[in-house]
Image 1 (cartoon, helix red, strand yellow):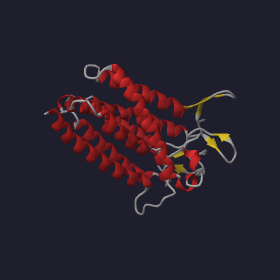
Image 2: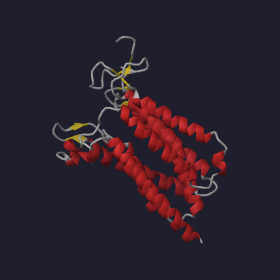
Image 3: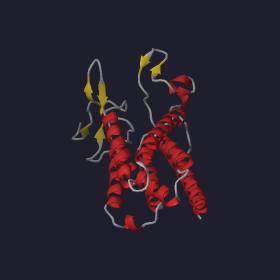
Image 4: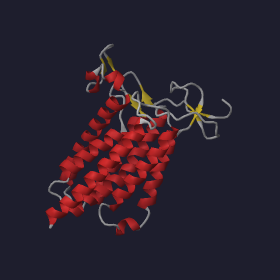
Amino acid sequence: MNGFFVSDFSPFLYESNLISIRYYSLFFGIGLFYLFYKILMDMAEDINRDIIEKNFFNLVIFILIGSRLFHCLFYEYGYYSENFLEIFIPFRLETYEFIGFRGLSSHGGLAGGLLYIFFVFRKNLKKEIFFKFLDSLVLNSLIFISLIRFGNFFNSEIIGKKCAYFFCVIFPYSGYGLVPRHPVQLYEAFFYLFIFLAFAMTSNKKMASPGKISIYLITLTIFGRFILEFFKERQSDIDVSFINMGQFLSLILYFLFLVLYSYYYKELDKQNN
């Protein structure tokens, strides 16, 4: 393999006839637990724990639904347009095989999360408390999505383009052959982790008015994601011209976030005056 690292890990942490546990599922669960715990700690003085617990569960449901819909509609539209029911059920109808819900889009998760927190959760909250919650959610979500990208690495998915640098990786189970490629999953994972640490360790975040951290973080992560998409193989069966689907969705969701943020910042100002 000419000295390149070969990512031939099993995607399963544990596998038996009764139960199988993927690294992806483990990282996903740890990320969610961490996010829930940090929000509880950050908002302990501002929002009742029962309210956070109820809304966090609903938020996760919206994230999962958005992730699933975006994947099926924007990344595998050709297949799911002819197998519509499989979007909502964990079975391959042609073979009656249980396959779970394979395919989740991080962009869809962001869309689902934005819709829930701005259209549902924000109600009956003061502006400062809502945007303090938003800051905590966005900041700590970086750990969540970083762990997901590590899971993608173990799954040999979201494959990078060919490269010949010493740090490039061969993914023999990816379906792309024994060619070294950019480990773009790790690029993203460490990028999100770096941003998290940079903001979590600085005292400036304590002096920023509620909501400002969210703007900074969303801008940085969307910009970084847009750049890193150049290192990825095409993932969507829909052609969006000179940019790929991930870049297109990044721009659309960034615009959506700015519109919702700006509108509700002004709207909540009026409600609290």
